[in-house]
Image (tube, rainbow, N blue to C red; front, side, top):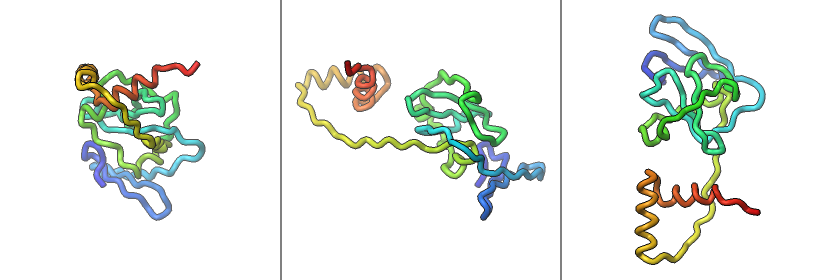
Length: 152
């Protein structure tokens, strides 16, 4: 597998270590870090940040960290990311096999419930217009609104 910018060749060995080979024939081996991993919803390479990886935390916030060196990422390593969501920038997802070498684990919350509601066509149009203005799908807009509700 070729790395982000085509600079590195990555090979996973039978014992789980990662062999990273650069163009200058420097070879480095990376072991899987021990301990608790940071749970993320996703992680992406974004062309606008060639030395960073952008991650989405469980709470939906976006952060970033340095692509190199391979090491276990902690909250102290995270830098604030203020750009568009990497999906909107057509970011390339970090290959699943690399998550463990950064001390990341993929948090998968499933959309398990479908709720059907009745709307007048004018209500549906308003909802679609507001969601589109926020650059979200109707489903994303409704889920974001629900997150703002308090249950007291």
